[in-house]
Length: 151
Image (cartoon, rainbow, N blue to C red; front, top):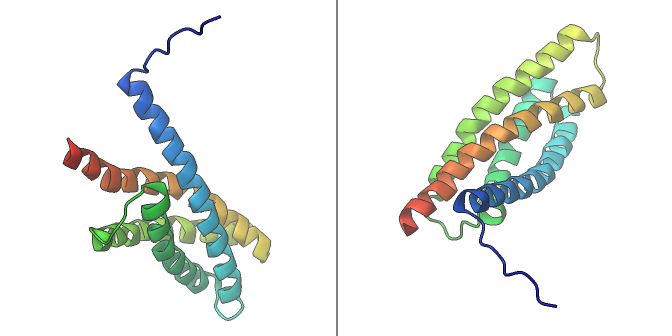
């Protein structure tokens, strides 16, 4: 019995699969850096109030995460455009900081003396939402340029 010849997928289907796979990898890498962020937040929260602990944990995990996404998610090797990618990561950090700080503020308004677990849960949820924005911004900066260069 012979198998049917494989039919090549249209370019749009291949592109969607590639994007979906990248999104899954981005989520896994981002998940690891969210764990780092959460641990940093908990460690820093012992000495700092919630907002400074959040900001410092975000800055440190963003720098590390941008390197991780360059290498693992988008397969960018070498040092070309490292500064631009880190600048984009830090600009997106500003967006994330506004969202996470606002989330902490809303939690503080809604709950009298929120627990550390509640703070972390709210922060993780806020970071998941901002993660989608980061994915598409990084993808445009790292993959979009590579595709234009090879064309």
